Amino acid sequence: MIGKIYSSVVPFYDRVKQAKAFKRRPVLIIGGPRNNDYTVLPVSTVSNRQNLDADYDIEIYLNILGKLEEFNQNILEHAL
Image 1 (spheres, rainbow, N blue to C red):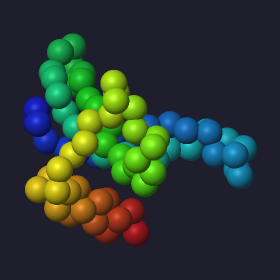
Image 2 (cartoon, helix red, strand yellow; image 1 turned 45 degrees about the horizontal axis):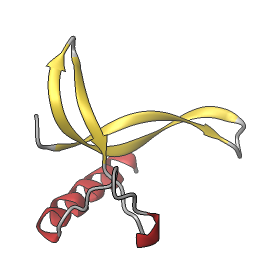
Image 3 (cartoon, rainbow, N blue to C red; image 1 turned 30 degrees about the horizontal axis):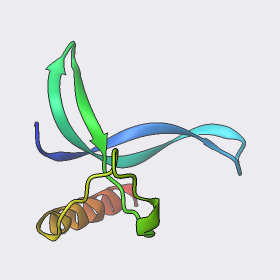
Image 4 (cartoon, one colour; image 1 turned 180 degrees about the vertical axis):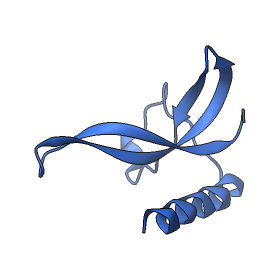
C-alpha cells in the first residue's frame, strides 16, 4: 500500500444542508500500518500557483498525473 494513491472518506460541514457530511478525497499512503492506521498525505490540485506553500506543498509531476486522472475517473464511476 505504501507509495500508492487511495480514496479516503473525510468529514466536512455542508453549509447548504447545515449538517455534517462526508466526501472522498485522494490520499498518498506514506507509512504504516501501525495500530491499524496509515500515515497519509492529501493529494489535490492547485489552480493558482501563488497558493503553493514552499514548506508544505510538493509538486507531483506529469508521469503521475495520468494515474491520478484514472483514479478520479474510478471515483466518479463509483459515485454515480
